[in-house]
Image 1 (spheres, rainbow, N blue to C red):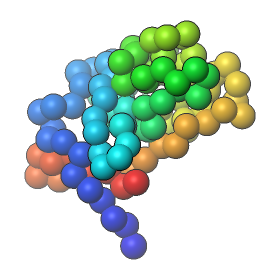
Image 2: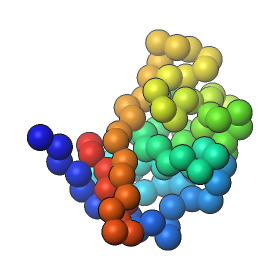
Image 3: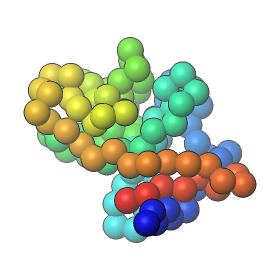
Length: 102
């Protein structure tokens, strides 16, 4: 059984090839817009704790603004270390609401 929670509204989502942070309960979520496709993952870079939602999109990856680690927004894997992986979450849009399953 899926349990989706409202994260934000559609008009607040980041523009194409940008990322943005959103609060959801006790977590901060990074929502990335890669070529018009939205993904959601943990906001904390596993390298040194940087805020992924404040980073940028390069080559389809979310790049941490602190040290440049690149994360695949679909799988959560780090380009620099494939064994490092942040959690990714299902995201859907319903009636203008952006819903996430954590």
